[in-house]
Length: 196
Image (cartoon, rainbow, N blue to C red):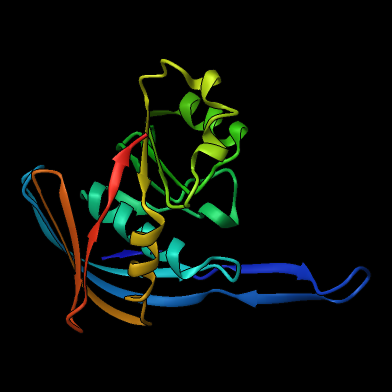
């Protein structure tokens, strides 16, 4: 079983106001991955902590990224709670980072650090205009072979958000590059995703 533990976020309601601790919302997901393109078939029981500032879209894109990269060593990182860790990552037995996965529009410095530390870096964007983030920084990463970008359409992210529940049973199927996410309520989303 893979788990992501609840974290606490400390912030101030107003300048000079009290520091209030907001706890993460915990989601449980049973995620069946049927990836014919990678010949990977497994069911993962996941506990996912949703940071107070994390949207439903981002939560579901994390689960999608997990499904698309699933293996026995893939785990959730602290991501949004800690800029030193990615949203998901794979480490080898020596602790070396094999895969570093970021979501959304990571800061240029975070991306540069990831490229410097990991053998492979993957970014999944899910906004309507990822070029607004990518265009100003792409020259710095031009030709970087470790880096892969994938743009999930904003409409797919919105449809996935509708599947978010405190307890979820999901299936991700991948065949010939076509990605489907289904839930036990009869929902189905064909994920529109293109390389960046």
